[in-house]
Amino acid sequence: YFSEQVDASFTATFADLDEDGAPDLLLAADYGRSRIFRGLGDGRFGDFATSSVLSIDLGMGSVVDDFDADGHLDWFVTAVHFPVGGGNDKGNRLMLGDGTGRLVDVTSTSGAGDGGWG
Figure 1 (spheres, rainbow, N blue to C red):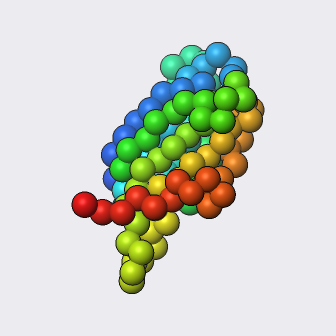
Figure 2: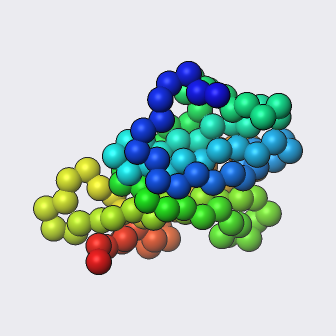
């Protein structure tokens, strides 16, 4: 259940980012903010007050994997990027997890940001 409407979400992914045994819900949103809702372990998810709201614009797809091979899940969100005259777009985002549900954005140091278009 959600206490507010979730708009413009393209991709829903379930993964246990905080390693508590309950799947969390990761939403890549196109014309909204991408979000992570913590799984409460009883089939419900934490509401917006307890969710992470990430600065990912134009999110269209996502994948969860252990990209840095540290044993913790990470999140990659695909997004368009307009290198000339773009608006509020930032391109793809790569965030590394630490097993507690915290994500660190390493997009600029990894070179994963240029999503292009077309």
